[in-house]
Image (cartoon, rainbow, N blue to C red; front, side, top):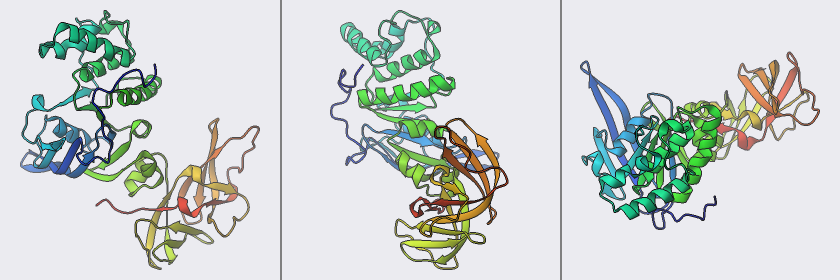
Length: 386
């Protein structure tokens, strides 16, 4: 099936830069009251989600991401702030009057109904003509790759197929946005990875805004146009998957998205564009500063470096590189790569990923003295959430 076989359900869906966002949250807060105490679930969220965008809310359990989605859907009302759909405030508007649909981890399919009847359910409630129901259901089942399975019941389908039925049932009503709350959580790892690719394909074909809630950073990186990383009711960083992975804004984001090495040191040189840090005896870290940031000599600085950006050698690296001496504490062979755990002379625990070439030997052994080095642009200074 190619992406050009089906027209989008929405004419000319915009992208994330459109003047009127598909979904906008302005100063949204949500508080609960229990046992005489006020419990903040969402502290203050400002988001603008573009039309036709695949947008993910990512974070650990209890960070506020599902509560944020439920406020978009209308299942929860914000304590403060406004929710807008396509430029119109829907704060106080009940869920059944908002032009969005929601897909949950529990697919909630009707077990006594066929695939066709499950997908057609919403259309029948709207008294859509039979001929139109047949046409729209058939087109949607083809998009989700279930054509020919119209007469089967949910119990006769795999978990991935049931998930596609739930998607088709939500999309056949042509909502302006689809909200997905951890919809792949019940699937095994291999099927979940396959469905990530399928979900992105389906979203491109139908052209509808998807808002996806997940605690799985791999899912978010795989599918999203943009990601909002949430922690303790706040959005700590908002950006593309590459921006969030390569340039994490906070210590939390650096640790939550993939594997990251956290290094600290005292700035011995500073300025508006570059800082040089001392890390242990002989360690010299060069960091490029972005976004108008500056560092003054004497400042204590924390930064992050991704493990695959580092090189590990026995000899002292060139002066133009960041370099830190240390000792190998563990070597772990993983097939495609070897991981080296290194304790730096400055006291940091660092991991380095080395891609395995054909017939390659280990670059170091446990107990060896080594140098770690990397390009200055891969040292990214960490800040605090706003």
